[in-house]
Length: 248
Image (cartoon, rainbow, N blue to C red; front, side, top):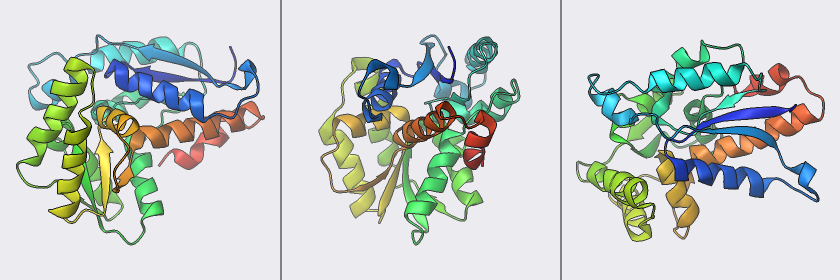
């Protein structure tokens, strides 16, 4: 197979499924051959990212991802994407394993925020405890002169309930809970834009988009970027040339 990219997924599986739907339904098609070529690695056995980040005695998820990257690199994809925000904790280590370009989903999302909302100096951030604990998005936002608003102590338990108790454990999106979190971030903490720092939250946005709030959705953004890049590569542009605008 030529002109393809690799998705490092399975963190979790239905969030990865959501990304595949976006890739398949956003491409303009008139025939089967118009769809994108990609390899979807749904490694559902990757240990919990937040558990390891908060407690290094827990299983290290880098080992699984390292194996996946090295296996896929032998196929020579045009680029890698990884639809798990928290797994970007090991982005530098994973990208160093291969010469294949590895797109940084979190960094791309932060730059899209600056591009789309140049006058906003802060953004509401809801994410896994692991991402919050290790300042993954906070640090990326600081690099571009923006601040993350995390809300009060009541926010994280609600977000964790939505991600783990609902989506990961039951495979369902509690739309009322999702909208309540967004409303609180907007009304009580003054967030005109809210960043969905977990792909389960991206799934919540896909399934329950009926709200009035401005959203930065990294998974949706990386889907659009992958489509843009692969169409350019399919048209004859060299992969390294195509991806360089997104290698921040």
